[in-house]
Every structure is written in C-alpha cells, then in structure tokens.
Length: 391
Image (tube, rainbow, N blue to C red):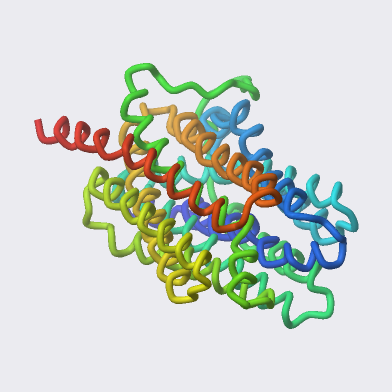
C-alpha cells in the first residue's frame, strides 16, 4: 500500500488529466474573438469545437487499449508530446483550417492521455478501483471547470489573447514530466506490441455498459453544448467579455466538481439516477431563462446542469471501472470514452447548423427533449443494476 501511494505514475496521471482537460476547453471563451477577428460563423465554431472530440474518437477506436499493451507510462509520454505540439499549433494558428487541425491533434493527444491515465488510476490506486475512478473523474472535472476561467482571464488581460492562453497550458504540460521520469516502466505484455487494435466491449457487459454510456452521454451533451455555445448564452444575457463567458461556463463545471465531492457516498446507480433528473431540470431552466432573458434562471439551470453532469460522470465511470475485466481496463474505458467524445462531437456539429436556422432557445428546448429520452433509458437501467447488486 505504501509503495502504491508513493508511485509517481499516479501523481503524473492526475496532473495530466487536469491539464489535458484544461487544454480541451481553452478555446471556449475565445470563440467570440475568433468570430469577430476572423469573421467565422456559428457553423465554423461548431467545427472547431468538434475537431477535438473527433480527434479523441479516432485515436480511441484504434489505439484505446494501447496502454494495456505498451504500458501506462510510455503511452502517457506519447500523449503528452502530441498534446504539447497541438497547443503550439493552436496558439500560432492564423486561419480556420489551422485551428481545426490543431483541435484534431489536441484530441488525439488527449485520447492517449485520458484512457491510459484513467486505467492507471483504476488499476493501481491503493484504495481500489472505486477510489481510483473517483480520483479520475474528480481530476477530469477540475480540469474542465478551471480551463475556461483560466483561458478567459488570460485572454482578457493579455495583448495576445489568441496566443497566451495556449502557451500557458503548454508550459503547464511540462510539470508531469518529473514524476513520469521517476516512475517505473510498466509494459504489460512482453515481446512485440500490436499497436493498432480495435476496442471491443464483451457481450456479457453490454447491458450494464449501455447504462453507463447513456449517463455519460447526458454529461457530455452538457459539456458539448456549453463548451461550444456557452459564450452565446452569456452574450444573450448581456455578458460580453471573454472573462464573463468563461465564468458562465465555469459555473457549470464548478458544479460538476461539487457533485463529485458531494456524491461520493451515493451508490453508482443512485448517482446516475439523480444525475439524469438534475440534467433534465437544468436544461429546462436554462431554456426558460434564455427565452425570457432571465439571468437568474440561466444561472440556476447552469448550476443544475453541472450537478447532473457530475453525478452522471461519477456513477458511470465507477460502473465501467467495476465491470472491466483485468488486463482490459484501458480498452473498456476507451469504449466508454468513444461514447463520451462522440457525444461532444455530435452535439457541437448538430447545434451549429441548427443555431443558424433556429433561435438559441429552440436549440435548448431540443436539449430538454433529448435529456428526457436519456432519463427514460437510464432510470429503469439503474433500477435493474441496483436490484442485481442487492440480490
């Protein structure tokens, strides 16, 4: 136990999860400035946002289980190098193509990092996989919560607002190198390594996996729509600066952290059930607030969305950690992440064209409808899982 607690790989995994998630939402408060300076529309913003989850999904489909074969440390180092290159591409991007390319590369690096870091925490945490899963989701939530706030604040106080936030994150990415260098090599399979191998979920796990997948869909629909269009919601309320946009998005994401901390004693099933209900209430309040220009309703809805997203993430990730067979932790978690990041990409790509044809309030009403359907799938599913666990 003591040696596990001293393992620098776990510290590196935590640092990388936080910083990688900060990086993923660094462009969010900058989108209005890109639109103003480059003359791009909501459709293009959706493409830029979607580039990241598309990059993640493409990597996870073929390389999601790489760290099960190559080792956690080496995969983390590879992902760090790719993500560092992406931040430089994004910082020095001068047109839309470069920006989308940078987001694709950023997603590729994050895919390598997130799957291997999560697997390292769930398999090696001294207090077991449930605790490792909690630390994993807490690190993810912390990163996405502070990312927009940090980027927005840096942009508002810098004369190079489209460069400085990326450079700061690039410097932060160097911090985990020290614990990674001290960690031991952990290749899990001797001999040659098959690099590309599609992720698969065993048939016996599909029913429980589908409940976790639906819950994380709810979480990432929140992240996807708020990550891409949170600034537009803020502007609708009259909050026009990068810092103000970042604060609105961060309110939702800080609520995610609060849910992670407050929901630790809930069972996996209870966390997911409460999460989808809060998400439905949050979308309803946000839609009503935007339609009626009510800042109070928007703030309340944003907070409820964050609480719901956090509980869904907490419960679904823990469920995936428990059902994953030994030696396939990264592969099963990668399949879970494919659902999560496909949701990010899909919501951003769909919302962009819709937003050019329909009012923002209509898009939010559609989110209410989708959230209702998710709840209709998750609630009976978690009831079955809870019954099986008690049997």
